[in-house]
Amino acid sequence: MRAPAWRSASRKPSWPTRSSTASISRGIPVLTLEKVNAGYGHSHVLHDVDLEFGDNQIVALMGRNGVGKTTTFNAIMGLVPVTSGRILFDGHDLTRLPARSAALLGIGFVPQGRRIFPEFTVMENLRVGTRSGRVPSDALDWIFALFPRLKERVSQAGGSLSGGEQQMLAVGRALAMQPRLILMDEPMEGLSPGMAEVVRQAIVEARNKGVRILIIEQDIDEALALAQDIHIMEKGSIQVHCRPQALQQDPTILERHLGIRL
Image (cartoon, rainbow, N blue to C red):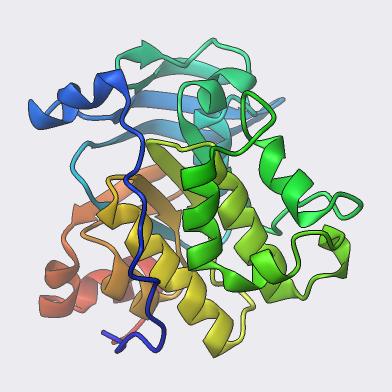
């Protein structure tokens, strides 16, 4: 595992609790996908996808390009129709709810490609994901402690930021809604080593505050360093579910399913 080159500020406001957090202590999964099938029009992408987690952890979803990882995220967020199966979050059935429902119930989303609003300022981008249109002061303090550059550029247009700064903004926007779960689609992709380390450490800090994180990651080193649980997809379904240690002990799993040699 890499030695962190960046350390977060010592002052960290307590993360607001939600009334449903008791479900975690009883071991009930926060997110469950049960035999989920989904796709785009006549293209059937997901085939009986089963996935669940509920502990304070980071879970990595891995697989070759085109196997359904991003579609899985889109199905959870209500952006692609689920034809059969169920998606449950914190006791709520998301399967047929409108797309906005996942965010309202506490699921943040950091999509691939960032998708910030380039004409909005940094502060306006942070406000976009909140229900009230304002970021609670303790959450804002924490976001700026994680990403000091955002504080320095708070009045700048999002489109004027560097790629790494835009990724910080995308992560900060997800954190601004004070989520219980964040879906992150390759959050370190294309970043310089320094920027990637800042984002990586923010992910760990969020996990330490009790935010569950489901991350799509193509880089096996990143997945092994960050995740406590790994799912590997092939042809639209999950074929492997294991701990990172299992992949290190049996590298043939990676070679068979991802074409990777450690």
